[in-house]
Structure formats: structure tokens, C-alpha cells
Image (cartoon, rainbow, N blue to C red; front, side, top):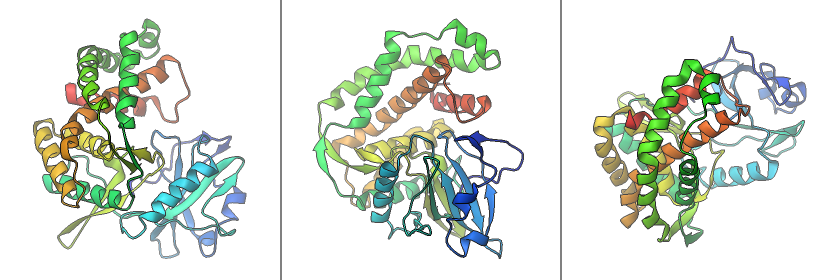
Length: 340
């Protein structure tokens, strides 16, 4: 999996201390999991909290996940159904059941689930071969999910909405800058980049709103940290695609744009090479993109700008954020790294 054990950071979420698994949840684990050791892992920016379950031999076997409060049982059941459609792929986590035989446990209105712990580590600075393997895995995953209909790309419209929102008020407030003086340089960079690039990217997206394409289940938040690799005796492979919490019906390019954007940002000089190789590797699985391959890089740029705008909006409104300030600003910096 991806997150190291957490030993020194206190978290309060959903009204209780997440360093301790609530007794009703622990008592709902099936044998032999009830007797395993559980270590809290560092969470990301989604608000979810994860424990790794270690069997008596010390091997990590499962991930116990406490989902954010906005995750409903109905929504999680749909996500589980989609994951089970791809269960034949070794890099997709298997979903375990609880004592009642279901895959979801609800405690105090919050959803919990158990999935196989996928081995491996993500690549912050991938090689070209790793980029190709990752995109091939995405192609295989998409093959498990049939096309549901044809229509405009939802991701494009979403990015356009956020870019338009920024352009209606293209500046950061002085109150925000005063609230985070330590991070002023990151905020100033973000403001400059949005002023320079939001409108041109928005204009380039307009053409793609007129086209219809295949819409199917997509991961939609397929970041580099969610794709794991192992190298066993010289055999490199994708060992895990994790975190399906944002899965929804969209155009397949949304996953390529998201993932390749992360990889390209780690090596700006290889950006074009990564996108070209990634798309080509994806298509070797039979997932032909046609003219949509020309939109992958553009959607990636639009996605990074839109995500940055969303974070800035949350900061402007002083909303609760399930992460430290440092982690949030690191994320904002990463989103705009392509233009620095």
C-alpha cells in the first residue's frame, strides 16, 4: 500500500480519536482478523483514515478504512460493485466481509470497509517504463467496466466550471494572504499562474464540449500515489491501484489525464514523452482513444488548475480541512508545479 504507520500524530475525526478503532467496529471483524494487530497510517487529503492489519506473523494483510462522513452506504456499495467487476485483476484490492456477511460496516453514521492490502510503493519520479506499465494497467481496469452511454465528457464541464468561477473574480483576498503569511509565496505563485493560464486553457476546452465520447466507470482521482509497483527478481509490475472513493461514470481520458499529469509534473522536461508513451501504452490494451488522445494533456492541465482553484476556495472560506496546513500547501504547490 502507500501510507507509513502513524505513531505521533493525533487525529480527531467523526467525533472520536482515530488512533483507536472503536470497539463496535473491532468486534465486527471476522475471525481471525479480530486478533490481529492494527497500525494507523498517515491519511491523505480525502478525510479517510486507514489502518493496516498485521497477522500473527507480522505480514500486512488488509486495509481497514474509515470513510469521510459524506460517504453513504449506498454510494460505497456502488463503489464495491464496480471494484468487484474488476476483481480478476491482481492489482485491484479484494473486498472482505464483516461478521454480518456484508462489505460495509456502519458505526455512528460512518462507513467502514476492509480490503486486501496491496503490496508495493508508488513512484514519485517514475521511469518511462513505469509510466507505460501504469497506463497499461489503467487500460486493463477500464476494460473491466463496460461503456454505459455516449455523451459529453463530464470532467471537461467540471473543469470549465471551476475555471470560469476563478475568472469571475481572478484574485486572492488580502485576508487569505494575512491568514497564511508563511505560505504567501505559494499563494502568490498560484494567483499568478491562474491569471496567466486559466483563460487560455478554458478557451481550448470549448472545442471538446461539442464532442460526445464513451462514458464508463472511471477512478477519477487516479493520482500517482494510488498506483503501486513491485520489482521482484527484476520483474517490474503494477501491484496495486488503490482508492476508488471518487469513482464515477466519466470519459476514460479523465484517469489518464490525472495520472499522467502527476508523472509529468515530476519531470517537466519529459512531459511530452510521458504523455505520448502513456497514451500509446494505454491503447495497447485495446482501449483506442481516437481523437480524444489529443485532449489528454489539455484535460490534465485543466484538472490541475481546477483542483488548485478548489483548494484556494476552501482556504478563502476557511473551511475545515482534514489535513495539516503544511500538507495542504504542499498539495497546492504540486498542482501548479508544471508552470513554476
